Image 1 (cartoon, rainbow, N blue to C red):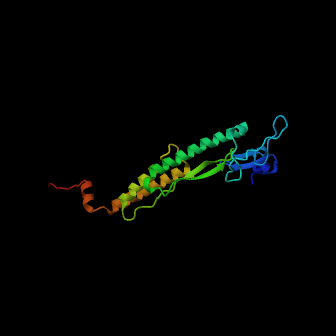
Image 2: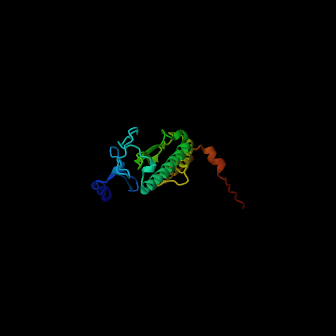
Image 3: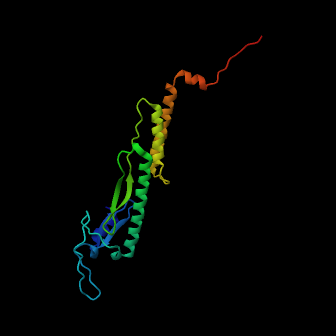
Length: 198
């Protein structure tokens, strides 16, 4: 367990909401959790909103107006990341076309407002060669590479898939050249004849 998580668990005034992929810990004040009313400035207790729907994690969504400035900043970062991740994966999906095996899957974190936000995602793509058809395999490799690099900012795994597609295309091209009919070699290679004069 990280020291930050240990401190939060040990702090009775904070609830752990989630941990982002970059290690950022998202927390909430205990006063914001369900079942704990807030004390109004006149000393009377504010009633809890009994009509609030609870989220899957057991935390009820919190209005953005009730969040601290730090929580609002975290929430804005999460919203930006969510939009970026969804757009990134949609570009992969669109470029993959029929090679995509289902829609995108996402990795979520619960924000300070109690709602899930995508912080990572992936699209599964069929990267297998087309058996017995090097031309079709080469076309598939080209499409795989386009799908992997479709977002303007491909990630490390995206670049790895693009490299694998380039290798697949190279193998398919080599297989095609080796299995091409002799007639095609004769028409593409220059012919030389030797004449001796003497």
